[in-house]
Length: 278
Image (cartoon, rainbow, N blue to C red; front, side, top):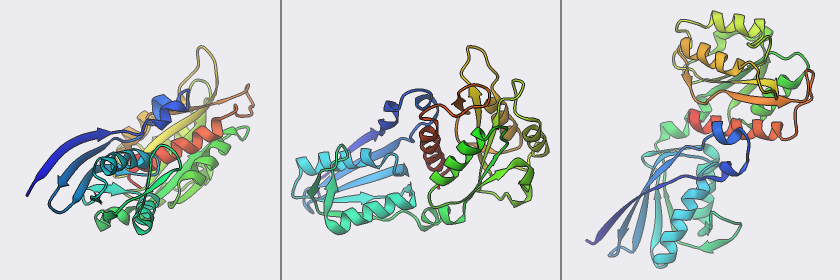
């Protein structure tokens, strides 16, 4: 049997076009792909390792399209047996297979293609159903609250809630959950309420929880970094950090948020979802 093996590494770099700090902090996970070509069976199997999500699925389509262009008579098999796939991504792939239409990965065009999907392990598909997201925030003028709500709205498919720090009960946290903590910069650090919460969560109670932190700040040459301090505290509490600290910018002390910051919050939330494996 004539089998060719060609290892590839792909990464969707669309997030690099968003500009600003989004580029530095919200990185799309890399997919590792091996293409196995069987001329006897007229099959090209694309084995995928990593996390497949709406954020990087276009890069997978590009590889499929390259194989289909070179071997138009082959059936394309996307093998996800060793991958983690978000619910929206697996739904999209199954629909492409049902319609026998392959996206270009670059624009809206599609081409006919015999396409078959090998599903990922069940426990990966069900992970999103089990995971809850808690977006805990303190907000003085409503700017941090707006970011927290945008993040919550973008965590598609999760049981996600935005909770003021004073109403949050740490007892609801469970292993596998996602905890996002947000605060305005207050005297070069998080607010006292957020600091008190993080102190209570220190020394290990966050083991098994995935976490990230953000702050809202005025764009200045010198400023504090509340998000970095919160990230350090979350890590000290035993959490698995799934993102670099993320800043969001406001106009002046009271805001409002600068143009584009809500969109950045949405994109960051989707990157969190991918990094957390939801």
